Length: 169
Image (cartoon, rainbow, N blue to C red; front, side):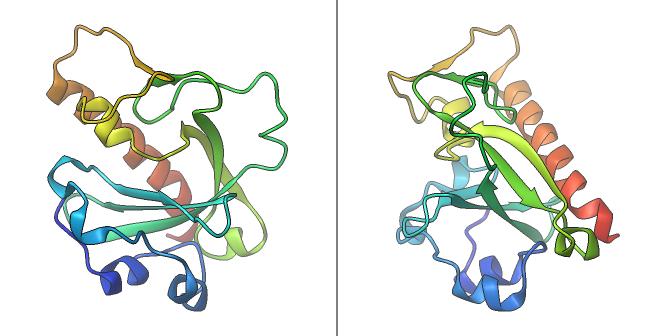
């Protein structure tokens, strides 16, 4: 992924108002991020731990940004998943959250959302590439090559982005 400017990030959001996009907290370390290893930029809002953001290029083009929230009741659900739906990294001890994205357009303004279990720190790209590890995060041993695993993560991400944006199309 190519580095993004603050203006590109703020202008990419499709499921919130322009005012909300202007006010959201950006990662402090944008310049130091390992952009070449990222399939998407994902971060948690340090001031509002139930909020997260994800920005990804679509079809190699313009970035699409999503606001995300921890789904209501997800923290208390004992049956919640420990497997990220994007990168298929398994976590123990709360490393996966059910993140809900309001749909883009009128459907989202009516409160409709789509949700997916994701790595709580949104570092899927780094887990897949082996650039980040944790005692709580385990990658399955697979017969797929690294490129195939990256492509699968990207397909999963594209499918999620598609569900959020199709209502506005």
